[in-house]
Image 1 (tube, one colour):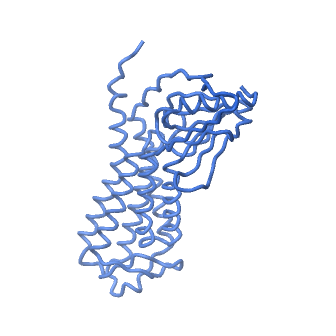
Image 2 (image 1 turned 90 degrees about the vertical axis):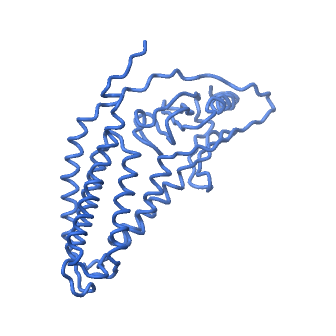
Image 3 (image 1 turned 90 degrees about the horizontal axis):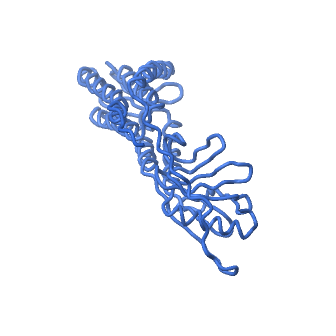
Length: 320
């Protein structure tokens, strides 16, 4: 019997995204207000990058700084708003709180400076920003209680045991490309934030954002292949890294609907108890049962054909 969703559950995604966007809007409004009020007390250019000893070694004009810093908050806010889930709402608030605090402290360090080259940003700023982020995270955690959990996904029966009619000497293979919009957005936000971070924070932060963005973008589209070797996954535009389930470890395969958030907690390469998966989106997926009872899942179109072929090839090896 189907039940109509409760009003709270119906509006839960909208409320969750609003709560995720809120801290970034607040941080942006506060930051722009501080810049407007302090404009005549700031040097031109501002010291915006600092060496490990805290001394300025990079500078940016006031207008460029305002645009870049606002773009950073907007970019981070957009990413969190699109990808947030209920259990991670606190992370959006932590990110907004820490980023907003760092920007505010940077403006404070530049106030009334007659020589931007002499501006110093103490290491304690990082501790203050972490504290501000922690306080904001507590607010986000408290707001989680105002977001009703979404209804659990309906169970969809597996299409188990299906095979393809191949002759003893026939050879077949199957391949599809699976893409993830959430991962693409995340990677793009990280890459876009990297040059801003290089400008405003110590260089390892920007380097880490760039490396993370490239890694996420590189795995946002994967090629899924079923052949005599088993199941193989690799980035669509590169031969490495690869994930493979050898044919002699396959005890069965099926196709079913997969909910990325409810079952795996997000997108990308996910590890859960008794199952692992490359989750690109919610929807049709290939689920492979391995020796020992563990499962490997990948969300990909035409999963039914892939499962049937994998069952046929495994049957030939006497595994199914």
